[in-house]
Length: 154
Image 1 (tube, one colour):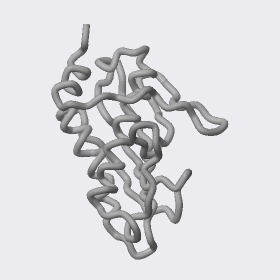
Image 2 (cartoon, helix red, strand yellow):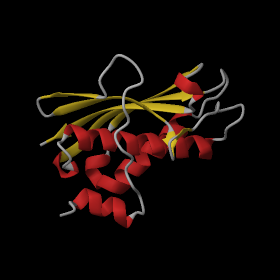
Image 3 (cartoon, helix red, strand yellow):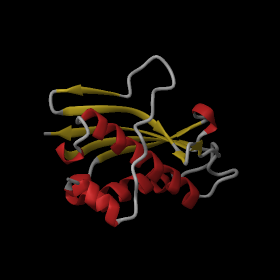
Image 4 (cartoon, one colour):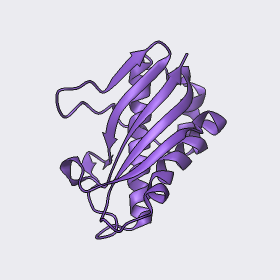
């Protein structure tokens, strides 16, 4: 049987990717009590990295779309951490978003809004969270966005 969150994803026409494997010597998530710390998820779509530098070769709308892709990967990791039952997710606690951008780019919050807005669209009030949005001179694989998250599960 499909749970309420999976049903909401389907209603929105969204499909979670498989939980991405780590790219180095770390784990994709750590569960400590009812808190799940999810390692940074890089922007990917259809198995390909979403690359670019905000303020140079990518606009805010494309960056926000990359952040949405990161949010879906974060949820995929939470589903894996919850034994496949995404309905164990109680709330999003905090996101930290990294934006690959030029030194003069100042719209990092608008880029990371792509992830924040999507989580609220999927989860309602449980998707509202604390957040940081910062610039990075570069990110792994040249991706435009990387986001890590903290979640509460039942």
